[in-house]
Image 1 (cartoon, rainbow, N blue to C red):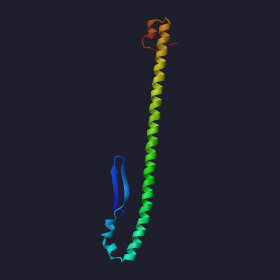
Image 2 (image 1 turned 135 degrees about the vertical axis):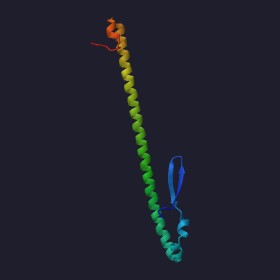
Image 3 (image 1 turned 90 degrees about the vertical axis):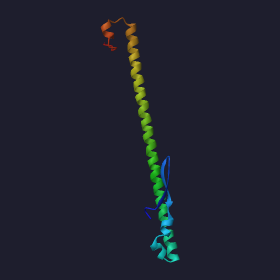
Image 4 (image 1 turned 45 degrees about the vertical axis):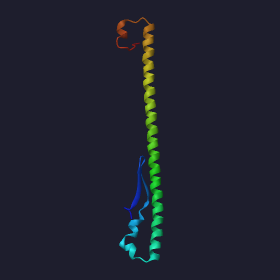
Length: 116
């Protein structure tokens, strides 16, 4: 039954819904069992299915959390880079304003750098 999962594929990815029991009912070994043995086997398979679905859902949940954390880290890095750029730009503006106030020789202002 490990290859007999019904899945739903959507925009958010795939999700396992449960076992496709038609393949179980049509299997020759299952058909040879008497009804009581079929019921016992079916109950066992359903218990295994429930546990497997819980594990799959937990794994999916962890993957979603990791993706969300990666997105948050990317946003923090982007904001930090923007802040760093703005700080550097403000420093350049402050140096230009200082150079405009002070009457420096032209060679000090040629590259926009202030030499103390």
